[in-house]
Length: 196
Image (cartoon, rainbow, N blue to C red; front, side):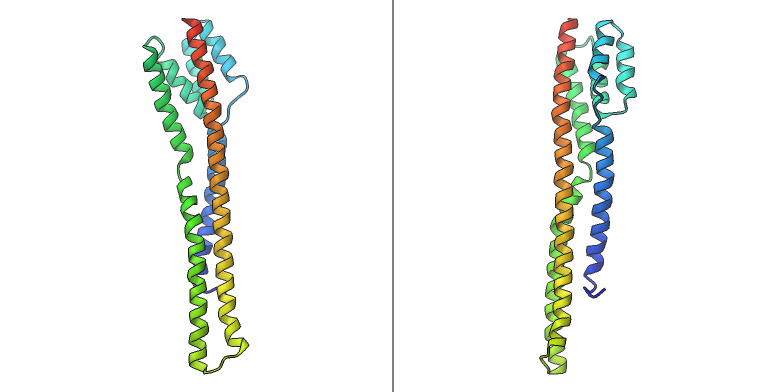
C-alpha cells in the first residue's frame, strides 16, 4: 500500500502473468507431448494396411502431433501434395493454439516497468507537493515520496522480468515442439513412400 495506487495495476498484472504462465505451461506440455513409440505404432499399422487403426490411434493420443498425423492419414490415397497441405494446415492450427495468449505475457513485460515509472513520477510529484504545502525540506517529507518511487519502480521491474522470462521460456517450449513435429512428419512421409 505504501507504493500508492499504481501498485494495484502492477499487482493485477503480476497475478495475470503467473496465471498465464501456469496455464500455458500445462497446455503446451499436454499438447506437445510426444510418446516414444508413437511413430513406430503408426508405422506398424500403416505397413499392415490398417489405415483406420492408425488414424484412430493418432487421434486417441489427444496430442498436437497425433492430430497432425491423423490429418495426413485421412488424406491417404490422395495426391502427396494434398497430404502435405493437410499436415501443414493442421500443424499451423496446433502451433497457433500453443502460442495463444503468449502475446499477453509480452505485453505485460512491456507495461509493468512503465507502470513502475509512472509510480516513480507520482512519488516525485508527491515529494514536491509536500514540500510546497509544508514549506519544509526535511528527510521525512522526502523519504515518503522516495519510498513510493522505489517500491513502484522495483515492483514494475520484477513483474516485467517475470513476464518476459515466462514468455521466452514458453516460446522455447513451442519451438522445441515444432522441431520434434517436423522430425515426426518426415518420418511419416518416409513411411508413406515405403508403402508406395
